[in-house]
Amino acid sequence: MPLSRNPLARLVLRWGGLALNVRGVLSLPRIPGYLVQWRRFAAGSAMAAPARDTYPCLADATSRTAFDPHYFHQAAWLARRLAAASPERHVDVGSDVGMIGVLSAFVPVEFVDIRPLAVELSGLDPRAGSLLAMDHPSRSVASLSCLHVIEHVGLARYGDPLDPAGHEKAAAELVRVLAPGGDLYLSTPVGRERVCFNAHRVFSHATIARLFGELELRSFSLVDDGGTFHVSASHRDADACDYGCGLFHFRRQPSAGTGRS
Image (cartoon, rainbow, N blue to C red; front, side):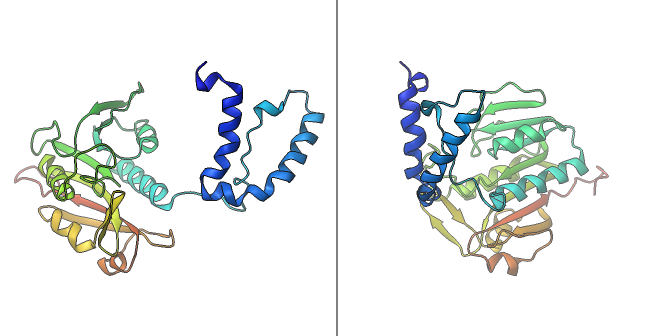
């Protein structure tokens, strides 16, 4: 019987999962109260609530809604810019798929990732591809994003080959495909520069400015170490962080006669 169809296996996974993460472990003292609540609920419920289907979520009763500040703010940041720019088509490389699904509701999105996204959704065109060798002609993409991605390239975290210069090659490829007058929306960890192998890199503001020096930096926003979003920030703000999230809006200067500013 497949694991997903085995009631005992599901029960063990649900309860055992409490011991597999810090939040779960810290919630273990709530088990007696949970059992009291379950028995009281089951006794008064018209819908069956058997023991074999119990599913303790003991760490979710918090006073505030928990969220990842980097991913929440970068999604809101990109959505607002795409809504304002209203591109005919947008290309994203490797960003959070939950965000991509929402963006595709109001702008056609081509989503490129080394691990293909197997979904069918109107407005979304998922494709297998590498950030190191994009299947796009040079200077052909007018609207491009890559959020919380380049810091991983070359660290083998996602099955990609080891390459200490992977982030530099990824940056060069994004620059290569961006069209004249085109916009690149980029996010990456910023602060004390280092490699946290094999999770990610953290960059200084100056390093990102150098990697994308061929482009014009139109704006810089920041999620600081405390999770606060700053719509306008400086390189000093970024470099004061240990693990902030820098949100860079770059543009390639238009060719003569295009009329775009």
